[in-house]
Length: 569
Image (cartoon, rainbow, N blue to C red; front, side, top):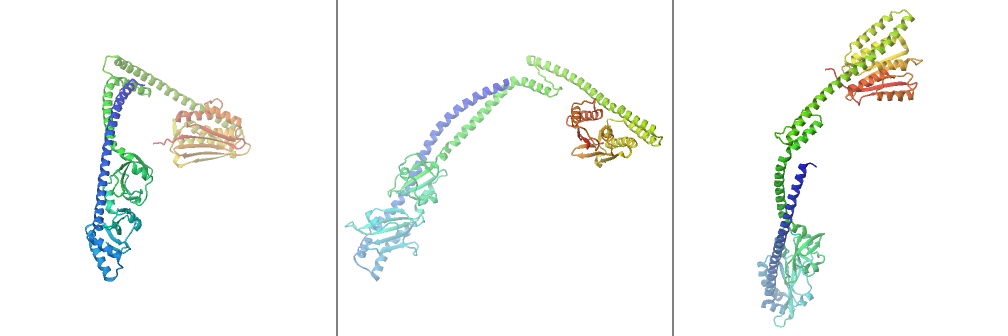
């Protein structure tokens, strides 16, 4: 590891460690303070809501108390219970009772209906909607058994309304003379519950003494029984309670006079969010502190290690071949001495490489020239032998044609450039085939196919002729019957594909393997024509371009190669 990195890591780790210790201590202390504050806050909310609900219960209790103690109600119920009334008498008593309870309906919009029942079952009711039937939750016996105490409950009709019933006792004998039944709107208690709901509350539930939810901010829970409600009611403070798969803290108000209890549930993870802002602030402070410290660390370490870093980068650039790289340090210390030595070394290496490169280019060009020169005498001997053979057989003017073709061919060979067009190469092949045609006559049929787009492409001179010569001399000449020679030039992607194909005697598998091996090793002693072409292709275009040869005995041979396109400008 570099010295600079070691120093940076050392000081950074120390800074981070100290920052973490301070942050953890701060977060723990602040979390404790926030937790205590939350406990007090939600206890206050529960107490306030409990007081509001208790006040509403007292208001209804007061209304019912005024009704059951009223002398008019007491007198009329005794009359109804004692005498079988009908007609006008019953109507007058009903009017008397209903006029009395009507004022309570007018003064309290949350009361849906007030009903007075005599002991013998006669009903006197004031209802907001006269067409509605009086809803009764409690049986007469249960009401009498409560002996004047109020019974509260949630209606079971799904409306969310509440029912309150209370026995009317004779003020003298304390015997029941009837009972009253009040139906209250659901909003009478649910509005209080909804108003205290916080954004982080999982739910606020008003439970009766059987654990039934009578009011809540979760409408789907009304009328249902909370699981383990007894343990829930007995919980105190911030104990945990699991509901719907979530752990909640429980904040419970005091039990109400009618036996109901208000429960507030806060999800554990939501309550912990109270410390989230603090943790984020501390975390942000840590980041800023560490960044500032890291900046100072970098600044001072940079001043000590920059010269060494620059020297390393210069060495890397030289390693990648950039010998123009200079490393300058204006100092007289050890780094300055290294700078002078480094610059002197790179200058010497650059001069040496340029000298070696020039020598290598000269050697490569000489090798290419030598390979091209091998073709001319090799072919010249074969051609002169052909002319000699024709002259001895017969005296024919066709010798003039052959000689002319040979002259053009030799002229092209002697004066050839390194690169010629495909058109020029095909012309050389045609001259060669003209000479050979007079030797073999109809025994050899030739076909040359060239894509129109290929004629102006540049290729190495005399790259195809050795392959055509090999096909005739080694493939078709030994064949007893006539044969076919096909030369094809086409485009394949961004490459030119050259193919020389004959249907001659072919090559034995052992010899074919030896040819392929010699071509791979650039051994041109045994196969001058093929080896020459193969090595010229390699030297001009690189490792990915070589001759490919396939053959089958008595069926023929195919030689092909690809080279990149190089169009004549």
